[in-house]
Image (cartoon, rainbow, N blue to C red; front, top):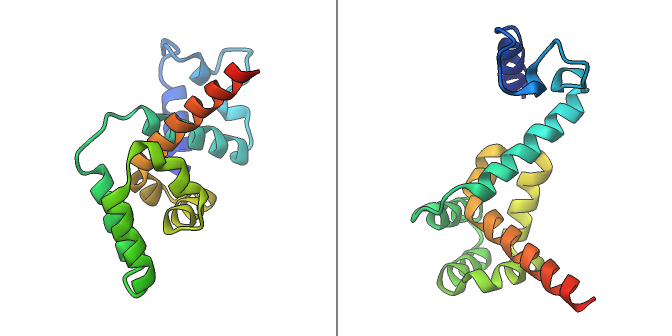
Length: 146
């Protein structure tokens, strides 16, 4: 977060011709610079998640997540079997199921989100993307029923 704050300060000191008004010192509007560290951190974290959701799919994203899960549970045969099951049975339609049951996916992803561990969050990017997609779809279905 310190690096992001430093980057904002650097860009704010550059000529005010920046297209992003958020970084302009001369504006009367509130900018990131006026926010507390906690609020700034929250905004950057939201932007990170938004960027992950918008990233194109890659062939290795699921493999990268599974490898991280195996590493975290390398001494737990029970969880390793669940990871193997995930690898074989996971599909986009059961993303919410995997997240809502008591599983390694839920535990690792929630811990990464709570601690804002960007490295682990990035490794879960494909899962986050499809969890978001499925939740949006479920919400739209629910709204349609009202």
